[in-house]
Structures are given as C-alpha cells and as structure tokens.
Image 1 (cartoon, one colour):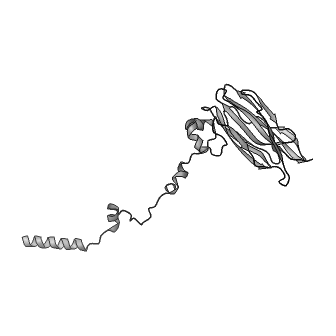
Image 2 (cartoon, one colour):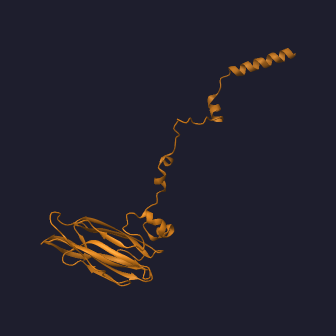
Image 3 (cartoon, helix red, strand yellow):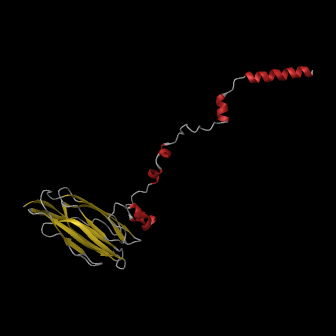
Length: 233
C-alpha cells in the first residue's frame, strides 16, 4: 500500500512538470519591473514639461492680482515697463511712436503697471526732432495733454506718490519737417476704475494726446487717448 501511494505521488509530480505554464496569468500575478533601459510609457500630460503645465497665466484683471499678491507678480510682468509704485521712463526708438497701450491696476498697491509698444512712424531717411514736456498734471487732478506742432507721442514718463495714490505724467513728442496731422479724434473712456486698459491705434493713425481724471475712492484714473492721421505738407 505504501509503495502504491509513493508511485501515485511520483506520477503526479511528473505530470505537473510536463504541464505548460500559462504565461499570461503568471505575468499578471507577478509583473516584472521595467528594465532600466526600457522606456516607461507616459500620458501626454505627464510627458509635457512641468513649466508648461504649471506656468501662470498672464493676469488680466485685478482679481487675479489680488489673489497672487503684488510681490509675487513682479517676476511675471517682465513685459511691463514698471513695477507698482515705481517710476516710468519709456521712449520709442528714433522715428517711431507709441501705438499700443496696456495697463492693469492692483488694489493692494493702488497703482498700475503699464506696457507700451512702438511702430515705425517717420521717414527713416530724414531727421526728426523730439522734446520732453514737464509734468502735465498734479496729483488727484485732471490730465489733459496734446502734443503741439504736429508732433506725435514717442515717450512717456511718470512717478507714483503713495500718499496721493496717484501719478504725475510727462510726455515726449516727436516731429518731422513737412509732416502734418489731421482728422484728429478722441477715444471714449477705455476703462472703468480698477479695470484693465488695452488700446491699439487704428491703421494709419498716431497717438498725439491723453486725457484722464482721478478718483480718490477708487484711487485710480479713467483714460482716453487722442489720435490723428498724418500726411505730407
């Protein structure tokens, strides 16, 4: 009897060795780690650079600015010509004038950061003449300015006062002999208090003036701009 049981156990062991292994079930039960040289599949989102996934959007209104805070945003605003509470000293290259104005307001700083862009304006083969104004407004008061003598705005300067929570402004105007301006008109007010400003001069039009007034409640200004055509004269 013991010999028979032993023979049965040997036969069973031999049969198990001969049975083919189900590789699929074995792999599922005991997955092999990827080899160091094998590429590990990733999703499209994982494959993207972290900087692109987490890059902050450019703030477009004051609510974004208030959440992030003034200090943390300074590094995000490299395209702007100033920081909050800091001076502005911007000039276009020779023979160019300002044609894009963009600004956003921050309630913590009670100030704006500004961006200006320039375009070709005057004949490059002929000289131009430029002059800078003195400051054209006082704190909390109306600003009303137009470049004289058929000249066009090519630079802007400003400084901020924390007591008044306002800025004083000055302008650089550029002219060229035998160039005259015409068909001048003003925009409507381009912003409400605390809201963004974005203005682009229409085709064949040039910035010549600015108007704004200040609110002590909002500690901000509303702005509109004057633009003209130009022609030989």
